[in-house]
Picture: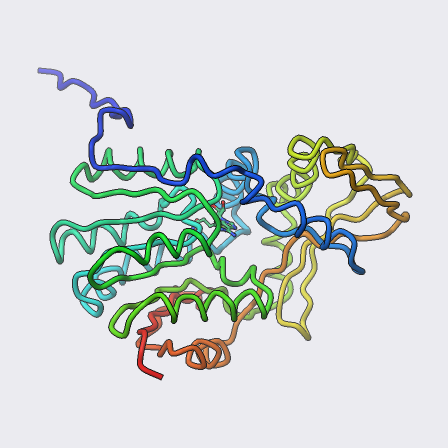
Length: 336
Ligand SMILES: C[S@@+](CC[C@H](N)C(=O)[O-])C[C@H]1O[C@@H](n2cnc3c(N)ncnc32)[C@H](O)[C@@H]1O
């Protein structure tokens, strides 16, 4: 007899989920004062938060499937082999994830926690509401007993909400998202984590290890990476009524070896006058001038763990993929 094909359950049929913060005005998430400031500085830059409207989130998923973009597969490999060890080391904990995206890799962690420790709650923080709904739908169709909360907002506000959960917590940040932070942003995040979390809580962090320029530059110069970068301008156009002409920019991504990071830029191929009408902001961009759109730090574990230790986060263990391209580090919140 033929078995009926299981159909994916719709989010509305699933009970254990909440999405909070969906009513936060997007002007509080995509703050125009910060954008105007970064576009006025020399060199100009755009915060990497502007990668993530619905189109950008879909393009990020596509990037993760590019053969040269090893980061997703490396973290997936690590969690496939070691998620259970993470659950063993931390003991039962509520999971909170920064920049969860579609939470595809987190499924491995959630499964390990539920198998080791029984009912588990998971709070996913992200600026993109739609991707949180997708994460909820994927996770709950596999684990209907998971207690899922989506928190729409930036890391700072999301963390404040998530920290109110009682009991031990495991904060998670995958996809090398900490690598997108400048020094001061990383310091501020770690300071906030240390002030909101208690000794005995943990922080699991995915990082991209320093490696040859060839591998790095291939990962950030494939078709999906180029599209993702250019789409930042389209995001600014629809959000702020802008006139960026995407065809007058070229994608530039290179390994900045002295600063141990990859950088993505958009270079103007001709002089242009840019307006963001909703912000009442405009500027001239010279031919050849670049706007930096993202940094991606490439890390040496001992340097990185020192920064965490300075904020009361002690490295307990780290795991790498077989090619040693990426690492996932488990830090414990300790008394300072
Ligand atoms: C590099 S992707 C990683 C997604 C997922 N964690 C993974 O490893 O595949 C970064 C995610 O963080 C979200 N994000 C970026 N900046 C953020 C911020 N400042 N606050 C909250 N979420 C942010 C994006 O919407 C995106 O889903």
